[in-house]
Amino acid sequence: MSTEGKTITCKAAIAWEANKPLSVEDVHVAPPREGEVRVRVTFTGLCHTDVYTLSGADPEGAFPSILGHEGAGVVESIGEGVTDVRPGDNVILLYTAECRKCKFCTSGKTNLCQAVRATQGQGVMPDGTKRFTSARTGQELFHFMGTSTFSQYTVVSQYSLVAVDPKAPMDRTCLLGCGVTTGYGAAVYTAKIEPRSTVAIWGMGCVGLAVAYGARERGAKRIIAIDMNPAKEAWAKEFGATEFINPKDVPPVEGGDAMVQHLVAITDGGLDYTFDCTGNIHVMRTALEACHKGWGVSTIIGVAKSGEEISTRPFQLVTGRKWQGSAFGGVKGRTQLPGIVNRYLQGEFKVDEYVTHREPLSRINEGLEHMHEGQCIRCVVDLA
Ligand SMILES: NC(=O)c1ccc[n+]([C@@H]2O[C@H](COP(=O)([O-])OP(=O)(O)OC[C@H]3O[C@@H](n4cnc5c(N)ncnc54)[C@H](O)[C@@H]3O)[C@@H](O)[C@H]2O)c1
Ligand SMILES: [Zn+2]
Ligand SMILES: [Zn+2]
Image (cartoon, rainbow, N blue to C red; front, top):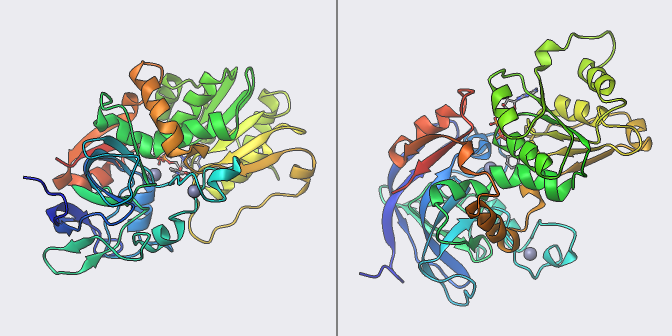
């Protein structure tokens, strides 16, 4: 029996309030309106942004809501005017939308589409309303990052998803919705690492590993991975790092940054490219100052805590170092993700290797706990 045009009742993990476990219970999901798509979510990765918002620290975080933004699924039905996807299509959800029409999309300079950005930040659909209602209390629930993948069904803007080759297994390709694409894209599209260059990366989580992988693909000759967790050395080397440094092993120096001095010494003046994948503002400064005078480029990927600021002496920039940031790896989801999926299918792009944990939806809170264990790169939740 077709569900098209009808409200669907299914399970979702609801974030009722900040700092409380998610609650898996029934929700009603209204049909998609004009320009919207309803998706049966099959798998979702768990990412730090979900944990950050659940902690209450995210100024945009609204409760009660359905979190989740690293998801894959199948189109169940489409609203009026939707042209690019059809029911049955396998899709990856995109928290960085792509409308191909706004000033940002047409600039050729950025992937930060603004078509649905304002309402996405408010936790509502582009027409200002919501599609989720709690079956238990009758309350409407906020959307999250335009995706809300912690639900068996979700409704998104037609700009917030992309159809990909149905041969690609969704229990892995869901990771292309955030972490893997973010790190790889930052190395390849944002920094555009040049062959034979030197690279240092702080933080060997999913994002940092994907940076290392992208750096190797671009032909970097030295890829220095830096992490306080010694277990990450083996991981880093598997993804392309040539060296590993634990900051605890670098002896402190009087009146300076020991890590900057160490890196400048071992690279004959500093690195061509550095990346912060920790969200730590002190790491961000170190990463900039460890860049080579005249041309070194430091890319910030990590998300700092709300209200924090970065600093350095302007002379660092005057003398030719560049400081920049990257969101979703600079990738335009609807245009570029199908190609990345095809490369994955041809065995030319790593995705499977990031998955260390799997849980069913009923154990999503245990999944969130794995993320603090130090052995978890990505946990994928099965929504079936
Ligand atoms: N810009 C974007 O579009 C985007 C997208 C996704 C994630 N992120 C951010 O990227 C960051 C990394 O995400 P992840 O999923 O890989 O996280 P993760 O927690 O899995 O990995 C972080 C790693 O950094 C290490 N680390 C922490 N502090 C460190 C320090 N001071 N020095 C060296 N290593 C340190 C940890 O041991 C860990 O291995 C997070 O801040 C996340 O919010 C940004
Ligand atoms: Zn994420
Ligand atoms: Zn746009």
